[in-house]
Amino acid sequence: MFDAIRSCPRPVIAAVNGAAAGGGNELVVACELAIAARSATFGQTGPRVGSSPVTGATNVMGVQIGEKKAKELALLCRRYPADEAERMGLVNAVVDD
Image (cartoon, rainbow, N blue to C red; front, side):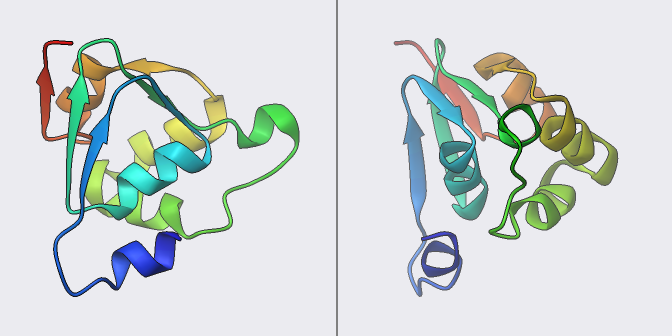
Protein backbone atom coordinates (compact mmCIF):
# COMPACT_ATOMS: atom_id res chain seq x y z
CA MET A 1 0.00 0.00 0.00
CA PHE A 2 2.83 2.42 0.90
CA ASP A 3 4.50 1.92 -2.49
CA ALA A 4 1.18 2.23 -4.33
CA ILE A 5 0.49 5.59 -2.67
CA ARG A 6 4.04 6.83 -3.28
CA SER A 7 3.89 5.91 -6.97
CA CYS A 8 0.34 7.17 -7.60
CA PRO A 9 0.37 9.66 -10.50
CA ARG A 10 -2.11 11.87 -8.64
CA PRO A 11 -1.64 13.58 -5.28
CA VAL A 12 -2.89 11.53 -2.33
CA ILE A 13 -4.17 13.42 0.72
CA ALA A 14 -4.51 11.84 4.15
CA ALA A 15 -7.38 12.90 6.40
CA VAL A 16 -6.64 11.64 9.90
CA ASN A 17 -9.34 11.42 12.56
CA GLY A 18 -8.26 9.21 15.45
CA ALA A 19 -5.05 7.24 15.86
CA ALA A 20 -2.54 6.82 13.03
CA ALA A 21 -0.20 4.30 14.63
CA GLY A 22 2.18 1.84 13.03
CA GLY A 23 0.98 1.15 9.50
CA GLY A 24 -1.52 4.00 9.74
CA ASN A 25 1.28 6.44 10.49
CA GLU A 26 3.28 5.00 7.58
CA LEU A 27 0.34 5.63 5.23
CA VAL A 28 0.27 9.28 6.37
CA VAL A 29 3.99 9.51 5.55
CA ALA A 30 3.31 8.10 2.06
CA CYS A 31 0.81 10.86 1.21
CA GLU A 32 1.69 14.21 -0.36
CA LEU A 33 -0.46 16.12 2.14
CA ALA A 34 -1.95 15.26 5.51
CA ILE A 35 -4.76 17.01 7.37
CA ALA A 36 -5.45 15.95 10.95
CA ALA A 37 -8.30 16.43 13.37
CA ARG A 38 -7.15 18.13 16.56
CA SER A 39 -7.80 14.91 18.50
CA ALA A 40 -5.71 12.74 16.13
CA THR A 41 -2.53 11.05 17.36
CA PHE A 42 0.47 9.72 15.48
CA GLY A 43 3.28 7.29 16.20
CA GLN A 44 5.03 4.04 15.44
CA THR A 45 4.45 0.83 17.37
CA GLY A 46 7.09 -1.48 15.89
CA PRO A 47 9.74 -1.82 18.61
CA ARG A 48 7.06 -2.10 21.30
CA VAL A 49 5.57 -5.17 19.62
CA GLY A 50 8.81 -6.62 18.29
CA SER A 51 8.61 -5.53 14.66
CA SER A 52 10.17 -2.87 12.49
CA PRO A 53 8.84 -0.73 9.64
CA VAL A 54 9.09 -2.64 6.37
CA THR A 55 7.66 -0.07 3.98
CA GLY A 56 10.53 2.39 3.77
CA ALA A 57 8.50 4.92 5.74
CA THR A 58 11.36 5.66 8.12
CA ASN A 59 13.55 6.79 5.22
CA VAL A 60 10.79 8.97 3.80
CA MET A 61 10.06 10.37 7.29
CA GLY A 62 13.72 11.35 7.54
CA VAL A 63 13.32 13.53 4.46
CA GLN A 64 9.98 14.96 5.63
CA ILE A 65 10.69 15.70 9.30
CA GLY A 66 14.45 15.29 9.67
CA GLU A 67 16.57 12.26 10.44
CA LYS A 68 16.76 12.67 14.22
CA LYS A 69 13.02 13.23 14.64
CA ALA A 70 12.23 10.29 12.33
CA LYS A 71 14.45 8.01 14.40
CA GLU A 72 12.79 9.25 17.59
CA LEU A 73 9.34 8.59 16.17
CA ALA A 74 10.33 5.13 14.88
CA LEU A 75 12.22 3.91 17.94
CA LEU A 76 10.56 5.41 21.01
CA CYS A 77 6.97 4.38 20.18
CA ARG A 78 5.66 7.62 21.65
CA ARG A 79 2.24 8.98 20.70
CA TYR A 80 2.33 12.49 19.26
CA PRO A 81 -0.73 14.75 19.38
CA ALA A 82 -1.82 16.41 16.14
CA ASP A 83 -0.42 19.85 17.00
CA GLU A 84 3.03 18.38 17.68
CA ALA A 85 2.83 16.34 14.46
CA GLU A 86 2.12 19.58 12.62
CA ARG A 87 5.06 21.38 14.23
CA MET A 88 7.45 18.58 13.25
CA GLY A 89 6.11 18.55 9.67
CA LEU A 90 4.37 15.18 9.73
CA VAL A 91 1.02 16.82 8.93
CA ASN A 92 0.30 19.98 6.98
CA ALA A 93 -2.63 21.28 8.98
CA VAL A 94 -4.71 20.56 12.06
CA VAL A 95 -8.43 21.28 11.99
CA ASP A 96 -11.10 21.25 14.67
CA ASP A 97 -12.90 17.94 15.22
